[in-house]
Length: 207
Image 1 (cartoon, rainbow, N blue to C red):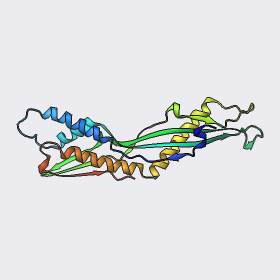
Image 2: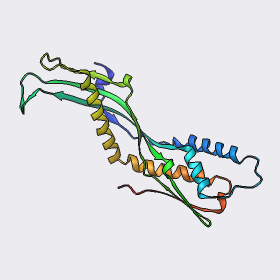
Image 3: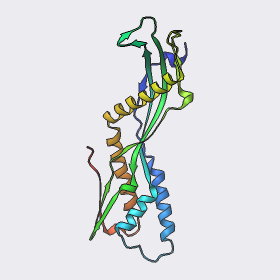
């Protein structure tokens, strides 16, 4: 019995600031643009919006998990399950979901000495299951209903959707919203000329 067979399915939420590198990169780019100027640039909605657009997609939360699922299928003949045609297999796999905010949709408003930034709601940006993490075992061999490649691919896709739903229910997107707001606030607060402005960063309410 392999170690993977022995271990139970597990899931854990790993929250981390992937935004840290992005913030540094954004600050570096901005520093190049303003290098050589004797005074800080005028703070406008266009200027701040441009800085956010340079970052583009802000990945703020990663969700790593290990999961196990069972596929089972039986030939159906007009609603009647045909005996001795059941096929099944167990699959264990690792996955990674990245959630964050598309900053191209951020809205920036500058009113006097107040700056208000509204970010789009966070969404799932990618969901990957490395092929080398997939293990299939306890596979049935039914000559009347053989297992096909599409059984594996279709099962994996349905498992992805189920995991994403559970991750969202466990607060994945809410956590991504919070981390994105903090990252954007850090980025804009450190820009030259922002020390005299009151900055608020919020997210579009999730429906």
